[in-house]
Image (cartoon, rainbow, N blue to C red; front, side, top):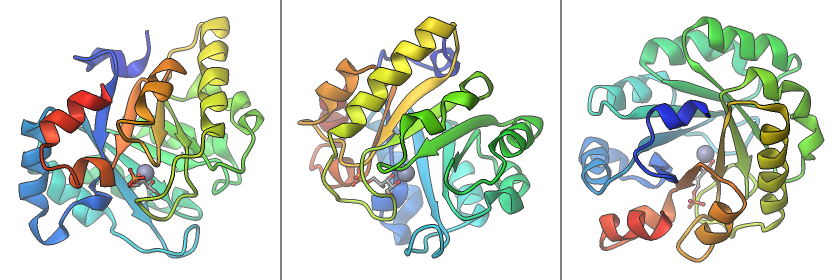
Length: 223
Ligand code: DX5
Ligand code: ZN
C-alpha cells in the first residue's frame, strides 16, 4: 500500500498544477478544481536558478492552505531546497518534493522533510536516469517523474518518462515499498492512458485542466 492510497478515492488521482491557474483569482480556481473532483493540488515553486522561471513561495502555499482541505504537494524546483523546507511545512504543505539534481545530500533533505511531519517527495528531470533515485526509494513517500523539462507549463509529454514509471512500479513491487508514483508535464487525455498503464498513481496536470471548458469532464478523462 502506498502513502497516497490512504487518501485515494480513485485508482488514479488527479492533481491540478496551480501553475496554470489565474493568480489574481487563485481561490476561485482552487474551489473550481476541487468541485470538479481534484484529489489533491500540486504547487510549483521555482527559484530562477534551478529553473529560469520564478513563481511563488510559502506565502502562496499558506494562502491555498486556507482555501482547501485537500492534500498539497509543494514541488520545489529550487536549488538547495534545504533552506526552505521548514517554511513550506509551516505554510501547510502535506508533501514537499525536492529534485535529486538540487540536493547534494538527498538522505539529509528527505530526513528533514520527514522530521517536519510532511510526506517526502523526490523528483527527477527527464535527463536524469532512474538509477539516481533508486538508492532513496526506501525513504520516500512520493516519486515525481518529470515528463517535461521543469520550468514551464504547456510543454509536450516526453514518452521516455513511461519507462521510468514502469521501472519504479517494478522496483516498488520487488522491494515491497510504499511510495506513490506521480508524473508531471504534458499530461492530458491523450497521454494519461499510457501513464496509468505504466503505473502512475497521481497525474499532475496544469494547462490541460485549466484550459478545459469543463474541468470535471477533463479530470474524469484523465482518470
Ligand atoms: C513544470 C511543472 C508542472 C507544470 C505542468 O515545470 O512542474 O507541474 O505545471 O504543466 P502542464 O500540465 O501544462 O505540462
Ligand atoms: Zn510540477
